[in-house]
Length: 379
Ligand SMILES: Cc1cc2nc3c(=O)[nH]c(=O)nc-3n(C[C@H](O)[C@H](O)[C@H](O)COP(=O)(O)OP(=O)(O)OC[C@H]3O[C@@H](n4cnc5c(N)ncnc54)[C@H](O)[C@@H]3O)c2cc1C
Image (cartoon, rainbow, N blue to C red; front, side, top):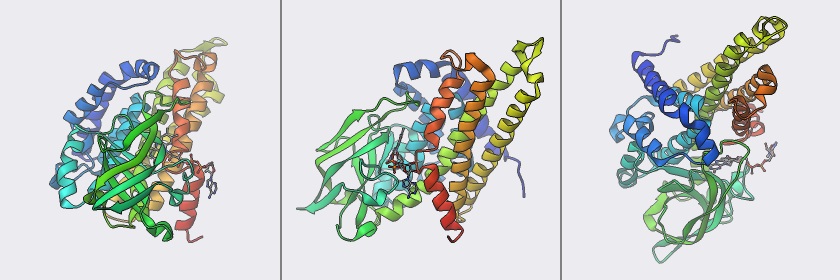
């Protein structure tokens, strides 16, 4: 067993940290205020290779695997969780299904631009009446005169307004239950496709979240991704990988909380000494440091299992559950350590608290993660 990062992984981490600290952190508050991240940021990330990290060299990737990808997501999210979620949604749930289930022609057409960051991707699974129970998908797809006609709507979709391509699920064979759901590759300029309402949110305000609307949306027959009826299995597999992304994002937020709270505690003087000298504050910092490190280790373990082509679904759920709950606790403690200042907008920790909460909801709530883990125990 070796807990050391390889030379290559250290270089990936350094590249991501340099980018995040120099080019993201100084602008993150402004992006939250404007509720948008400039398009050039994604272009630059593409040039630096961020989007190619988790994919193998055969398809134009950098072959850094999920360990390298998790290191990058953590560093980006430590500076801006909004950029972190846009990045993670693009790679692990937007692009991955095309890589995992696409035909050679589909991969040829889409992966190059997606890995270079020339196009962004989104994943349209959730619907107004199908959230945790995504098997209850109501969007339909009917094959007519050699074309698919999609009708329905998706809600809460990350990167909806930014994406050039969306992987979306729809019912193709009603009455076949979960085996009647299929996935489609939807170019953003497909006739009958539009982006609906953009949501105002508690946190992650610079990240784009909106509805997708399919109104007699016409797609060629070869827009079907993988097997007809294979959509349910595909999205479960996609979400397993996606949960590693959310775990890494959560570790980044938890680390940012510690980054803010520790120096503050060492310099804030009350009762004649820095508050870091009070055991009550030390114990909070100790718990934050311990839990962040444990969350990181579990994230790396799930990533390593995936990279080693071993079963990783249960560990990905554990990493996502533990890391997301860790970052919420860390954010609450960071606000507490900063006291009244922690409640103020000028101090970053109130943003971290608002951002952290999504981690317990997106890509399977904490309740759903516990169900996945229990199922893995044979319950
Ligand atoms: C900012 C943001 C970004 C998102 N991005 C995307 C995206 O890019 N693509 C996408 O497809 N979706 C996306 N989502 C949707 C997200 O994945 C869903 O919100 C999430 O899966 C929960 O579904 P729901 O909101 O319908 O809640 P519900 O499923 O209605 O759940 C409500 C509550 O009931 C609980 N619950 C439900 N079923 C059970 C059960 N069987 N046992 C116990 N408790 C249960 C849940 O845990 C939760 O506490 C995003 C959501 C947000 C807020």
